Amino acid sequence: MNKNRVNGSIVEKNGIWYARLYVTDENGKRKQIWRTTKLPVKNNKRKAEAFLQALIEQYSKECKTFYSEITVADYFELWLNDIKSEVRPNTYRNYKGNMEKHIIPYFREKGIRLQELKPCDLTAYYKFKNNTNSKLEKAEPLSPRTIQHHHQNISKALNDAVEKGYINFNPDVSSKRPKLKTFNAKFLNQKQINNMLTAIENEIIYLPVLLCSIYGLRRSEVLGIKWSCVDFENNTIHICETLQQSTKELTGESNYTDDTKNASSNRTMPLIPVIKEKLLVQKQWQIENKKEFEELYSDSDFVFTHENGSVMTPNYLTKNFRKIADSLGYYGLRLHDLRHSVASNLLNKGFSYVQTAEWLGHSNPSTTFRFYAHVDKTSKIAIASDYEQIFREEKSRKVVEKSAKIVEINSYRANLKILDK
Image (tube, rainbow, N blue to C red):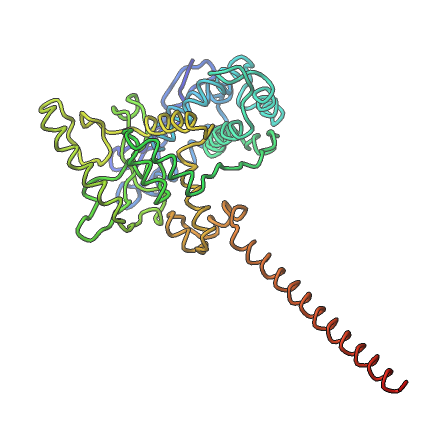
């Protein structure tokens, strides 16, 4: 398969800028084409680059290049390679999984060319994944939400193809996907959270789970906490880094550190006494483990580690939490549902959306409202109480009016008796 495309560079030659193109001809052979810009080198680099770009666009339209014949599957393979250095390792891992396990094999079998791809072809893919046993780990169709992730990957790849001039428009814009079902997160009330924490008190994941259940931290945030971010003197924890799951193929390690999700997620939280006490115990535990393991100990600044000092990975935390939650009867509960539970419990205790958003690190209170308005019982209780008060006052008014009427009737009857005498 010929992977060349029209590209080039500007070259200085005898004081003049030249455009050097690499073009694939009709027979698939690559050749060089030189064109003079007639521009002196001095102060004309930008003009020479513009000349080169115009030339590339011209030859891309006129010549029969690799991209006029490339199949959808082949393009997706090249796209994966091109974006590897452009996106975060964790993002690339997701793209790679979806593309190589599902999308590329499907379109490889179909043999559709990139320039002939139509919206109906993509609709057929989404329908196929939603109606056949496409899951790799068990025999059942992919969920509409998973298919939506596939759509995002495909659309990103095709948008890049449009930007580079390989196709004129993105056919995925007009495709049809299965309708997304409303996602209803699971919530635990404070009593349920306390019961769970009691049950896992002797587990290695207890402390990170405790922090998630109090601060509503994401898994990457809690595992990204380092001792340098914990201020025992001023009683604060600075959430400023995240620990992301990756693969050795991409980064050489199974995980890597990154910035927080957004600026508001970079926040300083108060170190409440119960957390301070347990973190001090954790620190002492690491010191003792370091002495015991000696040179075999993996020393780092991370708060949450295993006995040998190796860093606790995101997947380890979530998988073990899920197992324990299922064993306690909270089937299907995810670690991230503790974040939902914190938001729900704060709102139900009467804290505002602004306060809850600040605690969770949301960039805007509207995000908090959009996700948690349906669980905010405080506003509903206030409305119900208001109505109850209205009806209570109405009932009291009627009782008073009825009493007054009875008094009036009794007085009238008494007057009649007096007249009869």
